[in-house]
Image 1 (cartoon, rainbow, N blue to C red):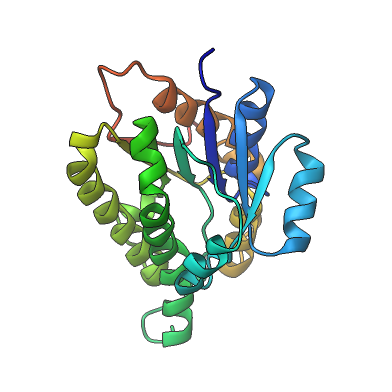
Image 2 (tube, helix red, strand yellow):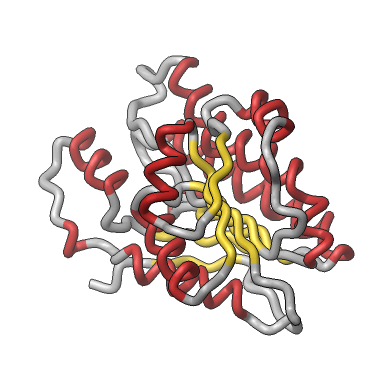
Amino acid sequence: MAAMTTHLITGAGSGIGAAVTQRLADRGDDLWLLARDAGRAKELAERHPGARTLVGDLAEPERLSWAFGHQELPDRLDSLLHIAGVVDLGTVGELTPKVWQRTLAANLLAPAELTRLLLPQLRLARGHVLFVNSGAGLTAHAEWGAYAASKHGLKALADALRQEEHGNGVRVTSVYPGRTATPMQAKVHQQEGKDYRAERWIDPESVATVILTALDLPRDAEVNDVTVRPGH
């Protein structure tokens, strides 16, 4: 009997992460969902029956190793999907070190540490590490300095990892969505003082389709980088 396909997902609670989680659950894959605390883990478990939860706070990357040391981890992993992220807008003239550190911790250091901790399981399965990056990982605009820096860094992490793990059969993909209709996008519009209309932006389901396509690609090929833009 073939082993069940196993995924570990961050950001499963909303937006793109929720869409991907539901799609993988619907087809019967084995899911592990990262939650920042026990309360959040309970919510995720109730929303996705059959999924397992792992508690670790991406805001504190240096504590993930300790947290995982006290919990059961998957013994093999077909994919690690980095979908969680935080955003705070502000000019370079007003962003404080606290905001920079919070942004870099959640968007860059935590994915790096999570990947490091789970590489043995990924190598075992010749698995896939997928980073949901952002258009901001390719171009930085005014007031997006901290977020764009974290996402430019995430691109570097993915590119280095791809070269390092190629010989181990681990595939690495970066997905760069434009503005997507998620709670995070609603927050950004609020920060920008703009009216938020979900229908103007990409449906999270469309990004989920791109992610599943990259995961399901036959072994002879690998999607390295894919940019997804609003179609209207």
